[in-house]
Image (cartoon, rainbow, N blue to C red; front, side):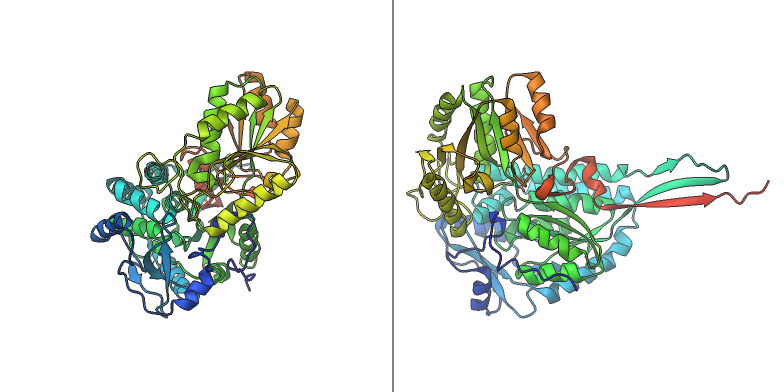
Length: 539
Ligand code: SIN
């Protein structure tokens, strides 16, 4: 039996699985309250959001049912769950709230489709993926609007996410044709030794709300390129982008059953994916706590796992850094998606000689950042995903200030209300404060002070996380030394945003296993088969 997985009851060190408050109800409570049959009609919203949703509806991209074996399906018991706009607290639409039974059918559909999808040529799979990429680009604007609507990030960032997310499909279309095996020189003259690369099989892909498209395409692109089929479980907070992307996969001609989507009761869906011997791989982006459960739950059927989990990214600013570059890079690393990424700078570790100058310049730059609804002109900071996310930020700031840290900018809820929070800078933070040990997942920049390079490395590595890290310095020698000493999967030097489809993304220590993106990302969906061929030719 797979280990029981209950995402709903978890305490939340990382906020990727915070339940939607609505604004204070847990997903489970909402499900219990929504026993009515699903209706895809849009619920009452403010005019802007309503017109975006109506446009999406008429273009066929506003989907509310799950996708099983090429058919759109309601939850079998008719349950629905609401999807909310975090900028207004209003519900956008009700979507199917599925569970174990629908997941098992999706797994069967994926398993059936695997037989043929894994057998067609790499060139054919490549063409399907290319077509899917083209359609994602054709619908870039609508998809970006959908992301802003359900996730809250500013429209410009949402467009960035479509480009980023679609690029994983394009890259996978190209790499599909380059999945090479190997020939090993044989120690015996009558044997030939080969290594074949073959798809792992059906993949369960569990994805978070902070990148509703990119975290899906980063998994599904390489999986499909390798010949795997997938059951996607998007976050119940942001299923609409996933469903729209799935609709476009159908329009791209990707055969029924290759891409399936189920959403709703996360523990039930997760447990079904774990329990099924037909699911050969789990790929997950989300909190470390949930990742550990998935890893444990995969043991019973010995599934391959890839985990992209929580971070605690240090951003080290040395005295010899270019101040302007360091401030801009720190802001990019910290405030992307309002601080809600796994690679957001969580601790800004600044050398004592530049500390005051840097703190002032950072505050000057941040106070000009416009906070608001992601659809409004000039907005660069959207709302946090929900009330629980705001509470977590508040409690970390409270803990830090009660131990001597000082709020030098922001530090409270934004006057816009809902889940808007002021971009915040706190000085005099130390390594023992909770804000240095937990992922804030919000727009708070805590400043820590250090004296020497050794101090900086020690402070940076003093965590069980190891995903993103950043260094600002003008010294080439120091860049190499520090990059090598940092116990992290990703290091940005004089650069605050380093994610790209062409480079391997992933963490060390408790930040996860495996890599996504790049040629290495495909290996996660492949098994190696060694074939020894004995030459029977006697002549
Ligand atoms: C994440 O937050 O999990 C992913 C961020 C990225 O891809 O840059």
